[in-house]
Amino acid sequence: MKGVLYEEEGVASAVGAILAILIFIFLLSIYVTSYVPAEMTSYEEQYSSSLMDEIMQFASSVNSMSVNYQQGETVSVTFDLQSGYIPLFSSPTLGELTLSGATNRSNGFIEVNNTKMSVTSGGALTVLTNNRYFVDEAVVYEFSSLYYEQYGSSPLINSTLAFNLMQVNPPTNGTINLSMDLVDMQGGTLSTSSGSPFDLTATALSKNIYKMDGNFTLTLSSSFGTQIFKSLQDRFSYLKGVALSLVNEGNGSDEIFIRSPSTISLTVSVLTVMIGLNGS
Image (cartoon, rainbow, N blue to C red; front, side, top):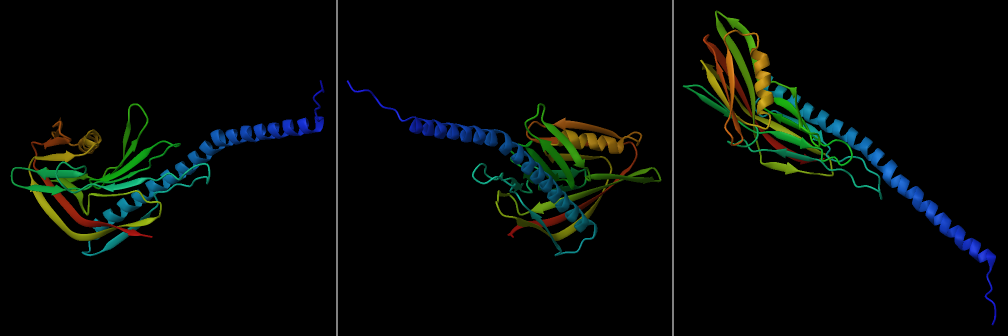
């Protein structure tokens, strides 16, 4: 029987190649499981911060339009819903921007009424990050105010970034003077998740001011009803005799009753704007 011949140089080359492949796979796995998530977390954190800045800029621009009202004036804010990413190893994170309709029972709808008058306004602008590595966040602009949500925590984190729904002004001759600023946003229902920057525009259509006297009720559709009630309590905390109560209607709406033995004078300002999208 003939013996089997081995070439030691060939065996050594094969073993070396296998080891090189194993080392490459090992380093690649470390890269994919360690570097990529860390880098994507940094990208998503930056992108989330940018989205918050953009919706805050939009809110500030629209509120400024209300203060310095000119019919037909248009403001524009650029939104970028895409995060940075690592080609071949990860895809970009795409956020979502939605505008609810200004109709009853939709998010951002509010009715202010007393026994003689009723004033309505609606529309909520929401930016959702859809993060996969960093915390998933949403910022909502409704009732001229900004609210923040953070998902994935227990309980869900909800907080108020800026509350501009109602102001308590100095009383005169025993009369409690209140003012409300509302933005009625037309153009919804609108939703986009774009990989390219776009301009979100708001055009001033009209501004109406209403005077209401006496006790009144706020009926609102919002996931932030409790926060709104607490913010109102803080605003009224130094006024004696004013009583606030919250009733959850169980159908997505809350009622906030504001009662006082003193005369309440309420000025409601409603700015109506048309929201649109323009690609950049």
